[in-house]
Length: 310
Image (cartoon, rainbow, N blue to C red; front, side):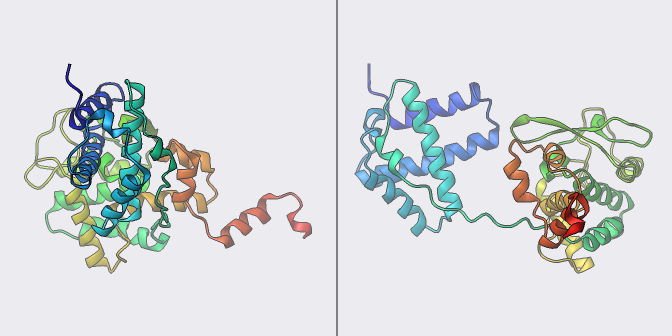
């Protein structure tokens, strides 16, 4: 029986992720790329790629050299932290499937990441975008599509991938009370209430769209009838920024930030916002929904029973 190579161990790990963890195709590509760069570095750094057993003999200096190599190559702290997380997960898999462990990995610190503040739009900016998104192109059905898309992103707090992943049978329409069922990261589903203005915009788009639909057709279509993708969604926002003089932070994802930030600033409960966004951790919601200090004081003064005595 031959000793398993590092590449074979990597392949076994990716197969395990797909079969046991049911990782998405995007997650599998990310792990494959991160581990591929790690193993390519080891082959160059050590002169040859160690077998599976030899991976356990890596030293702290070897691991630090990998992070330094990636930094010299222009990888940010966030990228290197992600790559190191992939390496750690890989070694946990090895340790639980016959070894080896890598003691040096436990001594290695993760590169510090400075998380950016949420890039939400001001209420006036989102109002202008929502009001005028459907008037920026001449083709009526595409204008109606853009208006419905912007309203869904902002009105329901969707990621752009979640919006373009909706099917015709998912379409929220006027007169319905059912929430929108959204498939988020990792295939996790959540239900989101839909405002009447959003339902009306979706209905107008469907009435004008010239392409035929079946229940399983993509809800949002490109000009030729194909699936609207993330790149085209970004183009919608680029067009809006240019036509309406919006800031550079006006991106598809900024509408999700704005949804959460504006709800919180209006007094919505953080746990409710967490559920609407589909966050597994409340700390993630807190990062996305910063409230200015003045608003915090206003809520405190209004809510605390003894605040008026101060």
